[in-house]
Picture 1 (cartoon, rainbow, N blue to C red):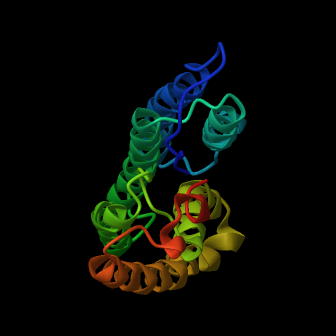
Picture 2 (cartoon, one colour):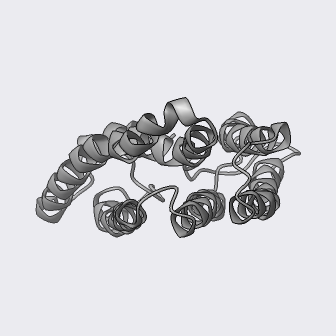
Length: 208
């Protein structure tokens, strides 16, 4: 998730952003059947819903790969990518929380983590002017879990034998997110002390 800012190149420079916009449309298409199934108390997850989840996940991989392959990374593309990710995560989590599939505290936790990511990225950028968003490995792991949890939660909700797993599911992302928060706080302190871009803040080390 996320896209490193760089000069555009090639004849298909709009392809990565088009894939990201497709993810937004797929998210909207997912919300209607997901809400309808939960509202109608029909727990069985149809194959079409699995397909939508899969296409959304695939688009998140392809837009970044296309941007790197076409050398079409841009600040606007990075913002669009993060926005599409946030739309998917928070819209699906909201539906699952409203219908009590996931606890409210988890939605608050994910929102706090996302806002902290944006805040610290803005601060750390002072030491990495080339970076649009600054990532770290524990944060990336947490973000992947945030992304997968909506599909995993609905699957567990739809299959009674997996209900105990559903109760544990929200806690999977807590540890990497907490480690990331501590590390990012340290990077902010280091950025505050730094008077020039430091090697440890090279965007190549953080951006995907």
